[in-house]
Length: 49
Image (cartoon, rainbow, N blue to C red; front, side):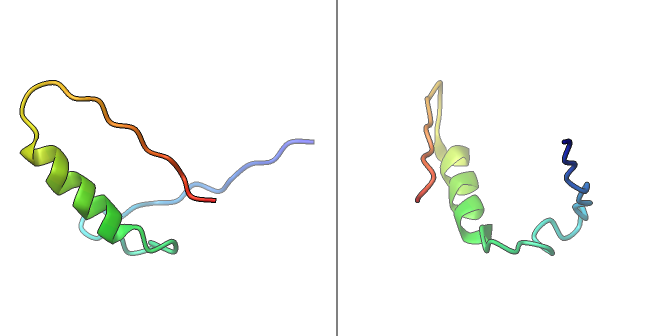
């Protein structure tokens, strides 16, 4: 049995338009954090269960 997930188009001008999981605040926080880091770094993420 094969399953296919339908492709989702992400509008460039509104990347969070279909953000059903409300991840915008987390993504914005991580983007701001990464912009402030100078030099090499390692990042790890863990999903909550």
